[in-house]
Length: 134
Image (tube, rainbow, N blue to C red):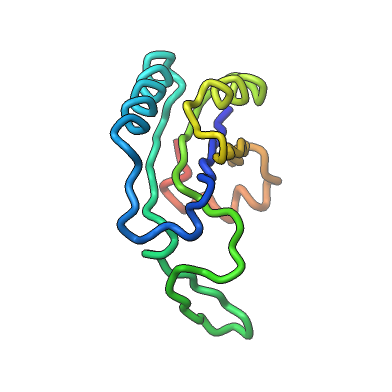
């Protein structure tokens, strides 16, 4: 089963565009990432720049509208993610418990849809997209 583990860093919603973690925090995270890799459960990982350097596109009324960051009234933002291939939700949670996150950070665990879970008509509608073929 694939799970996405989402990092929601405390205070990231208001971080400056050039905000960077400390060398100590990065070293601890790299050690953790190496543990995931050695265990054979890590599929991918990426860190994201703060929302102040991003943009949001909304589609109210059917027209795309772009708003540059930072974004008003945002309480939680994504700072990065890991894609894990584990046997169960419980195993994904155990890996999350081992993350060297700070006390204001939150990790969210979300199972990734597998095409085989969808009804046959949905699978048929998506079959021409080559990225979904394994």
